[in-house]
Image (tube, rainbow, N blue to C red; front, side, top):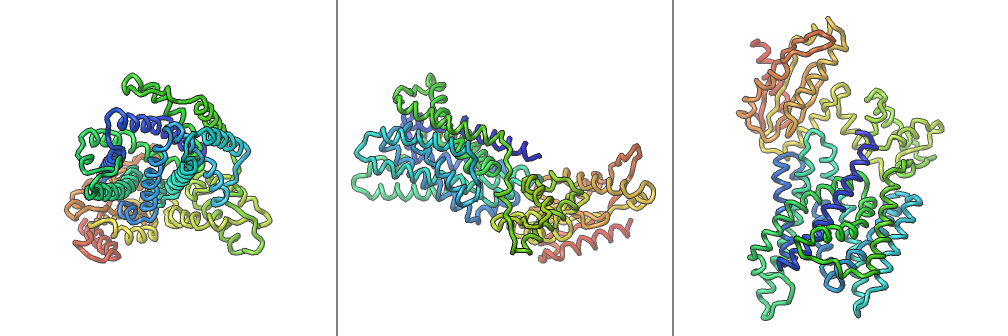
Length: 552
C-alpha cells in the first residue's frame, strides 16, 4: 500500500471514529444516564469489559497476546484512560456537557505543542492558524462560564485535555499494536492486541469501582453519585453497557489505535475538534427515539463550537491533501558522526538492493517516507544521517523486514526464522515444525532456466502463506528448502496437515504456457513432544524429512 493510500486510510478512520462513533457514544452515554437512569461509572465499566470480550474473541489465540499483557504501554494506557474518565466525570459535575466538551478541546493546542517539542514534528501555517481558531473557541466558552468554581473547572478541563492527549499519544506509540499493524499474515492481530489492552483497562476500572462500592457499604451514609453494590445488580445498566461496549466502544478503539498509528496523535486530536458538531448532529437525529433535547445549548456555545469545527477542518483538510517534505522529522545534518552517516546510507543502499531499487517497497519496509530516502540517495556531500530518535526504529525495521527476510520470496530467511523460533516458545505451549525439501526442482532450472526456478520458489512461498495465513511462521531456509512453524499445534494435529501441505505444493504450476510438476518431502518435529530444546527442532525435522526422502 502506497504512502498516500495509507495516509488516506488513516484520515478516513479518524473521521469515522469521531464523526460517527464518538458522537453516538456521547448520545448513548447521556441517554443511559438521563433516561435509563443507569449509574455512569458501572455503565462504563461494563462497556469496557464487553469491548474487551468481543475484541479478544474476534482476535482469537495467536501472537502478541502475552507481550501486550506484559507491555508497560498497555498498563500506561489503561491508567491514563481510567483517570481521564474520572476527571471528565468531575468536570461534567460542575458544567454542562456541551461546555465540558468544548473546554476539553484544549487538548488540540497541547497536542500541537507536544508534537512540536517532544517529537520534532514542525507544524505548518495551516496547523498553527487552525489551532489558534480552536483555542479562541475554548477561551470564549471559558470566559462565559458562570460559576463560583471557575478555578476548579479550568483545572479539570486542562487536566482532562492532558490525559486525553496522553491517551492518544500512548495509542500511537503502543509497541505491540505497532507490531500487529505490520503483521499482514495475521489480520486479527490488531483486534487481539487491542482486546487485551481493553482487558487491562476494564480490569483496573472494575477493581477501582469495586473498592469504591465496598467503601460505600462501610459508610453509615453512602456518598451520593458514587457506585454501590446495588448498582452492579441493575439489569438496565448491565444491558446498556454491554450493548455500548460491543457496538460503539470496540470499533471506536480499533479505529483510534489504527488511525493514530498512521496519521499520528496530534492529527487525530485535531479531528476530535469535530466532536461538538458530531454530538449535536446525533442528538438531533436521534431525538425522536431518545427524547433528548439540544435546546439548552447557548449562542456562545454554538459560536465556540463553530470556531472549533472550522479550525479542526482547516487543519484536517490541509494536512490530508498537502504533501509534506518530512526531511527534518527524520534527518539531520551531521559533520562529526561519520559512523551514523555511514550506517544510515548503508541501510538505504542495502534496502534498495534487497528490493531491486523499488523505492515504494523500501519505504514501506523501513517505515520511512519516500522523500527521506531520496534525500539520502542524493546526498553527495555525505552529511545527512537519521536522527537518533528515529534510528533505533529504522534499524529494527531493517533487521526484521530486510536483513532477516528472504529477498526472493519475502519469507523469513534462516537467521530471521531461528530468532522467531526462540521467541515463539514464550507464545505457545505446542510448536510443530514442518521441514520441506522440493523434489524435481533441479530439472526446472536445467530445462527452463533460473527465472523459472525463481518463479517456482515464489509460488511455493505464496502457497504456504495462503495455506497457513494465521498462527504460522514460514521461511525459505535457502535453495529449495522451506519451513513452516505452526503455533499452538500438537504433533497429532500437525500429522493431519502433512497431506494438505503436499497437495498444495504438488499442484501443477503454470509458467509461460509450460506446466511444471513439483513434489516435496516433508519432515515433522514437535515441541515439547520430540524435544524441549527449540534449537533442536530444526535438526529433528530435517532428519525426519531425509528419512522420508530415502523411503521414496
